[in-house]
Structures are given as structure tokens and as C-alpha cells.
Image 1: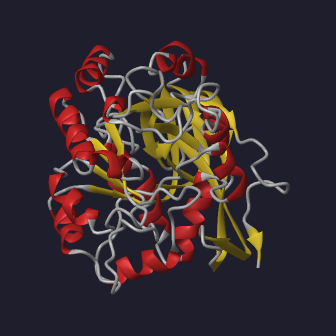
Image 2: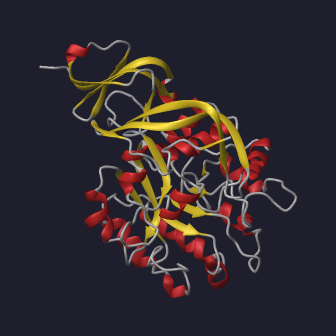
Image 3: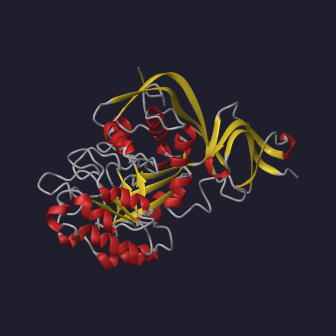
Length: 393
């Protein structure tokens, strides 16, 4: 009887948590990581996948997506942005609320090979309506807590959006109610920042951040929109640094309107790095601005991040942020066999933020395979007419 169900052979393994960056094989048995070592014997496996010098990382985790396909108009099919795009786990960032959540366990989670971990919007209808919160009655605090508790651990967080008109209608009471729901349900709070219109003060970020506790998540950390983490003079608000220091997770979540190279570089110059990279994937975002998780990785390479650091921001850090580091995010023996096989294509590439500002990169990350719980999925064609690579310079 073979020792391994599957060996991924011939790759360059990158696992920052385990201190790995080199030529190793990965052995998988029973949907779990069984070994990471040089030259595992092929005769010891039922199946061998040769990856020929490509990069092998723990399964990529996209911390901010929208995959409520068929319910919300912008919901992406999870597998298209997931296992067919090099991503093994997707966090749905509040597409549903307490009144609309039922479709997730009934239709979305069981009908995709990608693992989907939903957060629950503080708005009762989630993102099924635009705007989401249009009156105080848009929030049912007790029902929200009840739905999280009755999910038996499926719902892993509460989501709130610091946007108009919710802020004009409810002010800081809206995120405070979201924080109360999260705390009483025993899950973290994720807050979307940016998109604060002029009629509500952009300085609301300075009121928001102090209510966030260790383990909570700020998403859209590099937004150029009002309500972001830089003041009008381009200085990082002190509350952002304090949040970082006390253990609030900082996620960049690109999306259609919330990622700026210039803002990101100013934040980095002031000594605060985000912990996580994510897409904020939607149907129009995939077509127009986001494209893929691997292109988000390329954008951070273009900003000067090392490949190892980028992998850390897409694997173990989001695993920790959702409380799944014991199961996901590294190749430690016994963890779930979630693997991403990636290629790095050399060339003259250019990537853009939502404002149309470009950065050049000599390397582009593209997906090749995903292994989810030991099952192999080949990458699809990609969201662009020519596949996965960015624009040529």
C-alpha cells in the first residue's frame, strides 16, 4: 500500500511559517499534509503531479470576496475565483445579512469545491440592496447574533461598511452595533473603510479605529477615498498605528474603488505594513480592475514586496485572521492539504490601481493548479482575453 495518496514533485516550496524556500516535494495522505521533504520516492504514491520548478505554496486564502452568486447581482461563482484561480479558500465579506444568509449553507457552500467562509453583514439584507443600510430598521441586532450562533461556527465574522448613507442615518451607532454583535457572538468584526462622502466627516476613521479590538479586521487599508487612514496632509492617523500595534488585522482588499499605489506607498513610508492581500472580488471587479488574486500578488511585487512576504500575506496571515491557523495557511504535517501551484512569468508587465496609476513589474504571478483537501484542480483560462498575465508594458 502506498504511503501517500499524492506527491507534488519538483517544485520550489515557499512556506514562511515553516521557514521553507527551496526544492521540496509535498506528500499528501487522507486530505492532510503528510510530509515535506526533498526527493520523496515516487513509488510511495498513488499519484504524482510533476510541477517542474514552479512555486508550491500553502493554499491561497482570499480574505475579502463576494460569492453570493444568484442572490446578489455582483456575486462571483466561487470556483472561478477560487480553485480554478489558484485560491483554495475564500472569505465572503458580508454579502448576506441575517434575513438572507440561508442561501449560503443551502446552495453556495455545498456546490463549490472552493472552501467558503462567510462573514455576516450587520445589514439584515446584506448586499442584496443598494444602499444596504437605508434606515435604523435595516439592522436587527438580536437576529444577527442569533443567526451567527445558529450557524454552528460556519459564520466567522460580522461585516460593517463605513459608507453613505448609513453614516448619515446612524453615525457611529452603526459600527458600534456591529461591534456589539461580533462581541456577543464571539467572532471578529471586519470594517470596510473609505467611500465616506463629503457630507459625513472623513475623520470618522479616528472614531472607528479605537473601537476595534485585537483580531478585528480593517479592510481597504490602501483606499484613496475619504475615510481612509491618511489625513488631509498625507499623514497616517495615529489611531491606525495604534490599531496595528494592538493586533488589529490590516487588509488591502483592492476592489473596484479602494486601492491606490500612492496611498499604499505613503502608508508604507510611515512604517505600517498591511498583514493581508485580498481582492474584494465581484463580477465587474474581476473584469475591470481586480482580475485575480494572483494579479494582486503581482501588484505587491511591483511595490517592492518580496515573494516570500507576499505569500505570507495570502496564506498564514489570513488564516490567523479567520481563526484557522491550526488547519490552514502552512505545510505543517497534519494540516489540511490545501496547496497552490504558481508560475512566475518574466516579462515587462504593468499593473494598475483603481485610479489608473501603473507600476511596472518584471514578474507576474499566474495560477497553475490548486489542491483542495488533496483533490487537484487545474487553473482555468483567466479573466483576460489572453489569460492570467497583466498588461504588457
